[in-house]
Image 1 (cartoon, rainbow, N blue to C red):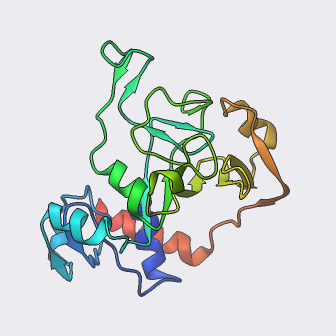
Image 2 (image 1 turned 90 degrees about the vertical axis):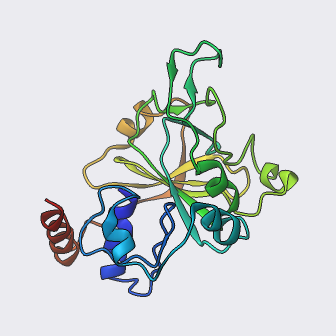
Image 3 (image 1 turned 120 degrees about the horizontal axis):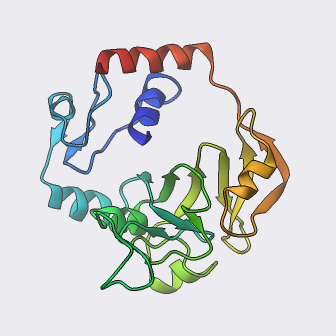
Length: 222
C-alpha cells in the first residue's frame, strides 16, 4: 500500500518525489508496482543503488529522509508498533511475528512516519505487547527525552479513516472518516476509548485521474 501511494503521488501532485527503498534503491521510478523492495524494476530505474548499510547509516540515521512508511501487527494509542510477539511472555508468546527489520530505525530517524494498516480491535490495542518500533512512548515528550531525531508517527492511515497525534498529549485522535464509514464502526474497531477531533472531517474520494493511474499501475503489474 505505501509503495502504491508513493508511486501514485509521483505521477500526480508530487512529480519530484524521490522514492527510497530499504533495499538500497535511491530515486527509483518503476513503471509498474514493485512486487517487493527487492524487485529488479526498482534497481533498473533507480538513480543509484547502494548497500543496505549505506541506506541506514548515511541516509536514514542522519535524518535525510522526510517520510517513512511502516505497517504493524499491533499499534497502541501513542503510535508504538509491535511486529515481534503477540502475548505477554516474550519467551513463550501466543504468536511470534517476523520481527523488526529496519522499522525501529525508520521510526526513530525519519522526519515523520506514516503508519498504514487495517483497523480492528485486535490490531489497535491500548498497549502493545512488545514495543518493536517506538512511536510516542507513553505520551508527549518521550521521544525528546530519548533523543530521537524524528517526529515519530504523524499520520495513521486505515481502511476506516485517518488518525493523527493530539498536539498536547500525542494520543492518536480520529481526524477524518473515509466515505461511507460511520464513527461507530471506528470506535468498535479500536481497542481503547478513541478520541475524536471536534472538527472531524471526511477524506475526499479519489479523482477519476487517480483511479485511472492506479488501474494502469495494477494492470502493468499483472
